[in-house]
Image 1 (cartoon, rainbow, N blue to C red):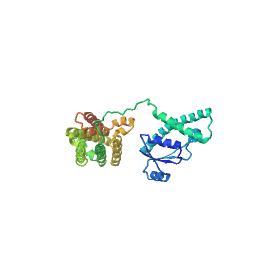
Image 2: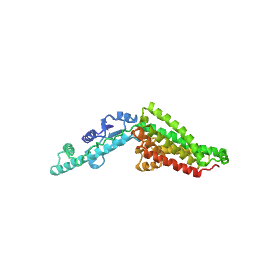
Image 3: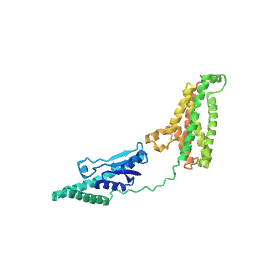
Image 4: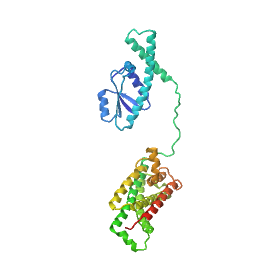
Length: 350
């Protein structure tokens, strides 16, 4: 990455620092005037700005008063990279300076220098030689780049398509709770007491209608992904059908259970949106789950959105079939059964 550098010292030590930065694999220093550097940084065209102040020389290093001025853009990953690279270079240059200083001290004990200029010239020569010695030092650890090839290339379009599908289908299905709360408030459910309809039959019928509507919405999003985003959603229709159905059933069953805890329609609507958004975020619908801390990744597996996303990504991104999504579909089915049973046990007509 580009690192803007202002060398106000223009000393052998500052030149050595810049030379070391040029050898870095992380940053590419560009030495410019102060006015231009500040303009670049203020316009956010530079992530980091390093200023080597006047007086940055051997004596300051020996006295421990040498300072560098580093400006970083807030919340910027490149600025952090620049900071680490500069710290590494300072450490390396510091070792060379220590060697050169020790050489000067030893030489002065053998024969005092005629003047300060001679002492400074000797230091520059010693610094050059010490840096050369460090460059020629054999590495004690060999760094080898991994050659393992990931068979799956991450596709942000696929992740976005699957994530939006899960998010905007799960939230309406969670909203089944508002439907039950509304009918309970209006007294509609009480009328079912006069019929032989059992609670499982009524709940399953309600869920079936909502799931059918959700499947139509899912198919619309899948067709959009195929035609507009050019995604391979249709490469395994049986696996896709299983994932869509089990995902919708799990979400609808959760909405049913939620409806047994809610008293008013407004509570149900707000809570459905809040829980839907939270589950979508933590389930990897908006960002890849790998970006979350390890603890959060483990906790996310208690959410149906996580399993729905994994199954859909196995299909669209990895070309998986029925066997590949069997685990995700099975877990979603268990979610659906568990939530449905809880909903039946807690369901009240009034």
